[in-house]
Image (tube, rainbow, N blue to C red):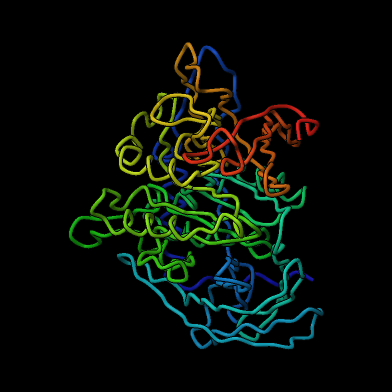
Length: 452
């Protein structure tokens, strides 16, 4: 039975009215038009502003994330300032055999004050198991499935998600097929200082983010700095989307790593320092040095601003970071690097230092989740030889790692009510390649499973 709608907290309601006024009377601030003689693509779609339909005593904006070996972090927001930061959980619906207590936080941004933000880590948990849980001792009940402890595993990868009708389409296509972990290389809510949009985004993604772990890194739309008042940025992002940075030895929520089912995943920060003297650089060097390629044969990296890009949008914005860190990734035999930022899909061959290299990572740009700014239509012509597939359409990607040596990547275009697989590639793990032993990695293959 649906819960009757209730009034929003006064401050959130007031800011919501300001935000809605901006949408309807100043749409040019929210939508950019693109045109290209080479492509006829669907235009941007309207923003979805999700309001709270639950009582003040119920949790909202629930999402989960991996938080160290065999543990999950449950995060949510409550209007009730007295709700405890507790999660009750178990393997049978309605029967909670365990309970955990965490902490809460909140933040202000000018005249906006967030509600109570809770973070609770639960576990140890069994792999490939469904758990039922409730937040703060209140209904409704949620459930999630833990990832497997061994291969195979399937990741969904979506960048620049936003909260438009295209976003809803992408998420519906994602949910139509099973997967284990959701990876997002930056640009989540597109709030851009309008804080009620963070709340709206949390409500929009809750049906998906509460049932599978969402692992995210920041994009430029999470920065939200303001001179003198908020010079450091990421105020809302860090409060709402706490990732396992401490568990991975990082001192910042803007970059971290985690292991899951034979895969080491590094989430880098494009918008914090990354030169050789920076904390992020030093952390990355130590993190990669600790990877055991027997236990975790695969390494994936996610960041926001792409290091390789043949689109005119954001051209060269990732170049300084590439120059600082690319060699480290190459020597560590990183298998795939995913990026967002450019609102299109593009897949490169294995690359190092701007040249095709059988021992370099595969680079994929996937900033096409459904953002409000529309698609980036203008690609270089002719296409450089290192760029193998590119298309300005909304969609999502799937990486299924089958075993210690082979994985399959596919990209699925949003076609109105359907999702169409437009690109597919099989590739071999670099550290298992005879070509790259002693330096770096393996060979790329296309088409079918027969190549295994």
